[in-house]
Length: 491
Picture 1 (cartoon, helix red, strand yellow):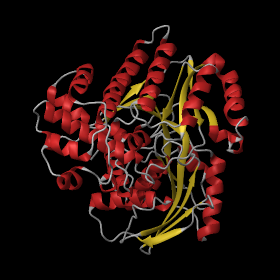
Picture 2 (cartoon, one colour):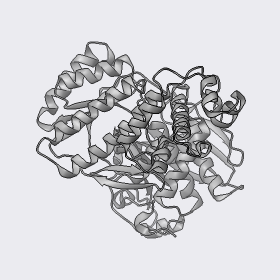
Picture 3 (cartoon, helix red, strand yellow):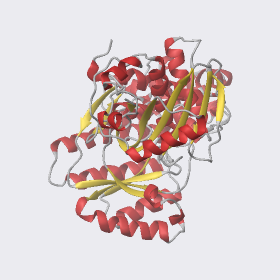
Picture 4 (tube, helix red, strand yellow):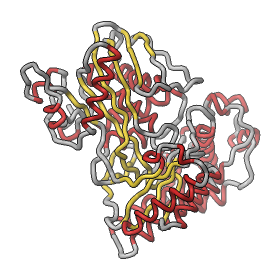
């Protein structure tokens, strides 16, 4: 049994009181026990009450009943550490206030009824005991099914109750702020709550990270980890194997600003993301082979460093020595590893990367090892807090963007333009955040420059290019570290 302090299911006391009905009120503790949550009551930052009330009204209109509970899971912004979680390296994200919110009613049938407050996302229903996820179509409901199926398979359950769910999200889709992972996490916590089961935050994050791969994306686990492990007021250093989170206090004299390029990129809908994952896997195997390590069992670049017991700086030197900047063909990779093309395709590559003709291994490894070092430097500077802390952190973010653009090739012209504009108008550092190829930038801005920065970036990027048609609140905003996933119960 996990420790109480490590558990999910904290109840927002004010929200519980506010949702009291005309029936006799129960103690919030009794409410948690009645749903299988044998956990302490803790006051947390509430979602806005008007939004919950509106969701309750829409649920009643849709299903003719009222929700029994609500679950929220936040999106995130990754401050630094891009495309390295699936290589085994630490990342430094924080949760944002934007989130996925689901109103839930368990039902006696075995049918999942899913609806969305956004009319662009059609209703969906399926048997709770026959979950099918189509990897070729990353439709919104498939992300819910990932979380549901992950919990179902973890507990080995076959006769699940159904539920009515109404989803409301205010994370801009395909923006690099992890809307899809937030929905997976929300669905996982919904399912756990309905079942009345116990899991720690770490266990639930690991299950949701694994289950999101049902959609075909070979992600690493950062998004799910911060959605559950986030705490208000602090960023987190997320480390893997084993999964753990450490507070990182950000400088008080700076504000982090998110700017949406308005270029949408769904990483499950293209092969860009999975190709990068495979390039890193292949680079790890070639580096391991070069150093006479058992390369067949190596999957991640971090494993090579760990087995050699050397520094990140030394890994960069080995990369220079072992890999060449010119792209590798599948045939050359096979020759280096001493395997057949068939073995490469079936034993190493993922299904949607088996027809790729060239792989850039040198560039990807260089990015990963240098970015992993930047994450550790960022944390160290935050801890030491020198007088020029904002300048130093900004330079690390600038280096990160250059590496993402030039070595990992996951930027796009709009992101590069937006980064340049942000730096021009006062950001000490600015970089793409999330998978890239579109989505958002994150910038570190001295607090005294925030007002002029927002006004100037809005005019230079959004107004001049007709991008102001996008909702302004979702396009450009200052953010601060928010809290993690929550369950709200009615008393």
